[in-house]
Image 1: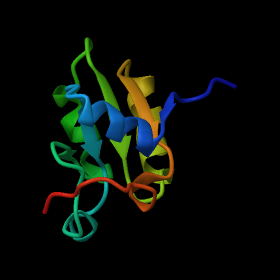
Image 2 (image 1 turned 135 degrees about the horizontal axis):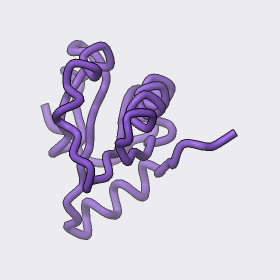
Image 3 (image 1 turned 30 degrees about the horizontal axis):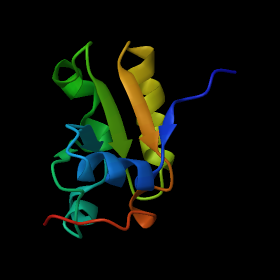
Length: 102
C-alpha cells in the first residue's frame, strides 16, 4: 500500500526558522485552535475540507496538522485522492515545540 508523505514537527520548525514559505493547514476544531496554532497556518476544520477543495492549488504542497496526526492523515488521503500534494505532520500539535499564535 502507498504511504502518505510525512514531515516531523522539528522539520517544519527548521523550515520556518530558515524563512521557507510553507503551506500549513490546521484541520483541528475551533476550540483546539484557540489553544494556539503554528504561526502562518490556515485553519480549515476537517469537516470543511470537502467544501474548500478550491483553496488547494496544484503547484503547491500542503502540510496538514491536527492534534496527534490521525485526523490530518485522513484529510491527507482525501486530498491525495483529489490530486493535491500533501504531507502529514506526524505527532501533530502534541509534538510541536515551536511558537504558537493565538
